[in-house]
Length: 74
Image 1 (tube, one colour):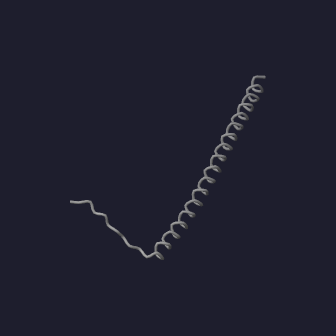
Image 2 (image 1 turned 120 degrees about the vertical axis):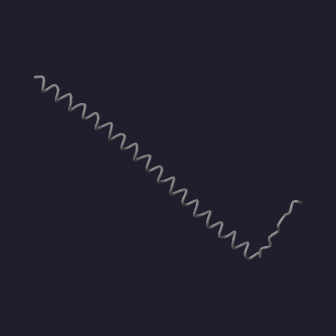
């Protein structure tokens, strides 16, 4: 069977409408990507903050344990 190329004819007005809608869609996708990037950055900042809090709490627990042990020995 020979290679067949199907040709589709579209009115210029319809073609321009399609291009316009594709541009709008691309704009929405770009905004969605930007929002997702911001959310990812916020989550990363939150994760770091939680890790810092956890480290600080652990250090405080160690200090309290040291004081408790020191007082208990005397």
